Length: 199
Image (cartoon, rainbow, N blue to C red; front, top):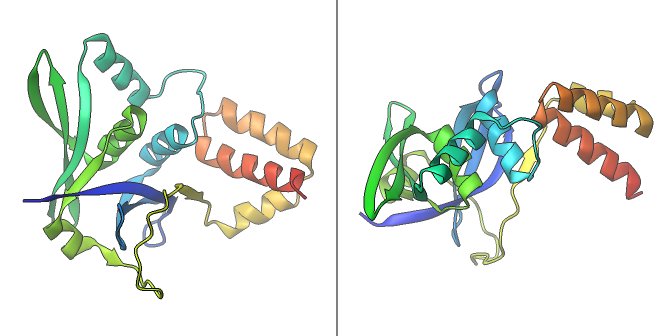
């Protein structure tokens, strides 16, 4: 079966499930999107790596990467290999001492590691056909522009709360949430501060 390369195009709160997030994967040079619901911890782990933030202590996926590096295990690719009853299954394709190994993984963990290693993410046509969404392309062309992932905060109340604070209060809040290691919230606060500075 031919593998189709994907890239992370968005990370946002899940509209369908509370306390969950959706990571949206896009077909490279294509119009299909594959949304996958993940937990808050995994969303935070992906967001930290996407935003190149440096936590004060390593997160679980950072620890896993450090462990793999220490024992010369390379992560070559992540493959979203199966979909059963709405659950995605993935494999980590690794090598050590010229031996290739496939390791089963939850898709959210696999994506968090893929972002850290900078390795490609793949899936198969049948998975995209059954769970993918086709975007409308009014020009009828595929875009070859690189996609910058977006991290979206969909809780309107949280956005309104940030807008009510001045820059000094936002800076103080940013420090507090970083100490609590709430990186998703930290990104939203940082973006609000940056939007004020650009005006």
